[in-house]
Length: 425
Image 1: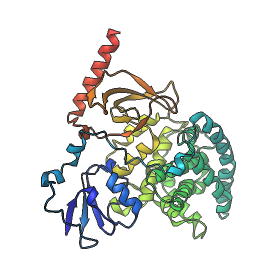
Image 2: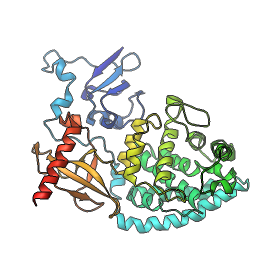
Image 3: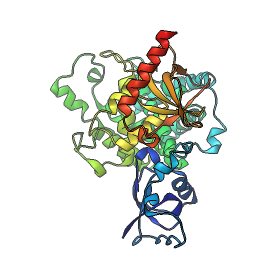
Image 4: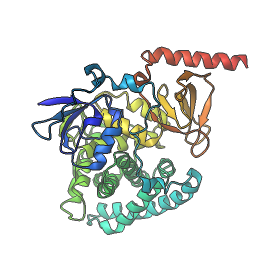
């Protein structure tokens, strides 16, 4: 039997069937699981989900609420309204303490990241060329590189991912794979996956486009529109890559999975098999997001790159293409937010995202308009958020959590008020 209970009533041994509330409000990518970990229990109790759905036939039964309790049935299902009078907890933004202690500034890490990029060009290029010649992949040659990429992402998740977007035509396939490796690692960390899984996700990202080594170079290098025949050839690269990996025991199964399925779509319109929904693994769904994001934000001979925020905004509108929950996780993992969104700053303010700032690296223009500590509106004045300096964005917020029921109307009002203040000045 399914029961809806408050997060604080959840205990070890219960079978979690699902959550009531937005997918931004809990850190779990899987919807159904047996609760066996103290860490997972803490995450649920600290989350902002409205209720947890437990199956008492597959796990422990919830303890009854004491008769003397003053908790009403209405209160059981309205924690969001009750919590709206308190500062919003940041329980969904997990950064392991060991990682947080290693964080470094953007400029400092950019120097290290540049060295990793140069090393990647040689090592990944050599690996891909060996695959083109039919030679087996030597994992021991690239495993240390994956660890270096991971360490860089842990120190500062923007430095390396920003540098690898700047690719030349000749190195695109190699560096695209390095970029997807870094993005997969960054996303896996946001999902709080274990160390071994994070490393395997990095390997999956590095090998996801290996099959392009079996595609004629003239097709890969073509700057004009592909013919139907050429496009059909390109679409064979997932299966070709899977074949190149073969049964190499050093390569994790998740890498084979992502290599074969990173072009599948949630609505079943992808390739090579037209898989849909739960037929696509979590890793392959992650790979699809990371692959497309790097592709559309990179310099290509036949198109101008999208800005990171433009890419996230447009990708979020492609219905049926990506897993919506994982797309949200990806946005939060990047620390980049599409225009029109609501975010929380680390100085007790809520802000409207206006746009990103092309004139300043990794900067975001916002309009703070609400103080969460005093629960009052404030004058919206433009603020440019830059890494490692001044107020920082903590993450996306749900407008309805803060009783902003007409978010579209409030956005317009904030913009109008800000323009009025600017004109008056």
